[in-house]
Length: 510
Image 1 (cartoon, rainbow, N blue to C red):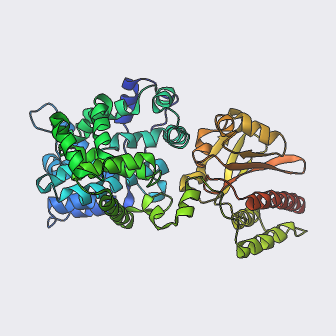
Image 2 (cartoon, one colour; image 1 turned 135 degrees about the horizontal axis):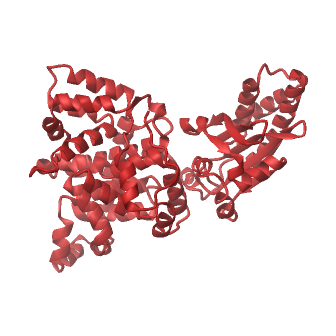
Image 3 (cartoon, rainbow, N blue to C red; image 1 turned 45 degrees about the horizontal axis):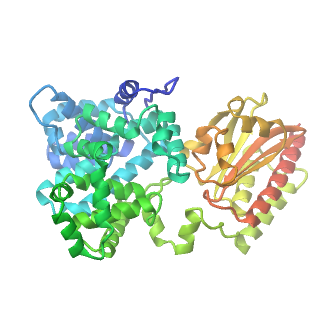
């Protein structure tokens, strides 16, 4: 897969635009093959080919960009649908474009890109279910605008995933100012960057209109939200709208469906009952003139349909939270400690630890030992686990085992010299426990690529020694929320068992 690896993060709008405009997004191998086969089949219509392309949002974006940029010097309006874009390009040029795009296995697609595209697919599902039937003549604008609204962020997820992950950690989870964080990380507001890319790519007009609203006319959203919160009094809401014809005309614009659908999908990633999601629910209920309870039922149904169609291993879909009891949802959001391990899990944990302590070591190789150690950590309640081995010069850390993390975690390679925390842990065996009280202090000193894998404010890090030298680093948590104290104690005992097993194994092989 072709990727751009910048030596330095851009800090100006022009530099970002030049970089991101040149990124070729990866396409899933299966989708790539299906579309190629369909294009070679003379019996397939353009509509059928367009439907097949929807399996890869990156492919949809690439085709629409190519078609719209090809006509940018003419009087033609930008293509509002994929079918129109294919027709403008012609099958030969579309096929040539397809050949230029990197086709990769799903696990090779960067996790941050996959997550963003999943949100876009969820937004398109919400738009289709809530608005398309009401705007039947405009359903293509509703669908494609909703699917591609976040697309300016997709190339950023390929070139700088760590920056997006740090943005999410600081803005969404810690509540820092988006303006301050974005100026620090990107040197430019993300909305400004998204609008500029959308204009360069000549994306559908409703997308550009949505960004323009968020940047230049948020007062309309604020006024509409003030009325929308009075959801239990629809007649009073209508009187307020009648008294403000400018707001009423704006609210009823079909283009707003794109922004509403993406607002619902993006905010649901945090929680269905988060303040952000509640605002978008109120605004959507006002737009549709629908009771809030009825709207919530519909958006939950659309989320489930999206999950059935688009969910993928290693990616989070908010529909998963709909089946949780209230207390479990609070644990996911980091408000209650994780439950202690079950009796069966603790029994399995004891067996794993006993095997680690057997002397002489019975493990045939290092992978055999670390697999056993990883399973012990999981049995004691750790949901996300990373086991990294240090090289002989204590220069780098490479992943040896992982659990509950995206596939790209396996290729993580950390330079110890670039983090004060790693240097401290590798100097001698030590344990650090991150909590809301010290998270900001330690997170700023950890590599962004590592911190991005463990979102949340609760984390355990422990270095292990063998024969007087630190050789391994354990990183684990329970989903990012408060840790079960029983699991914390078991984690410490497991680390001691792993340390003894490493020494025993090393002495046996010497």
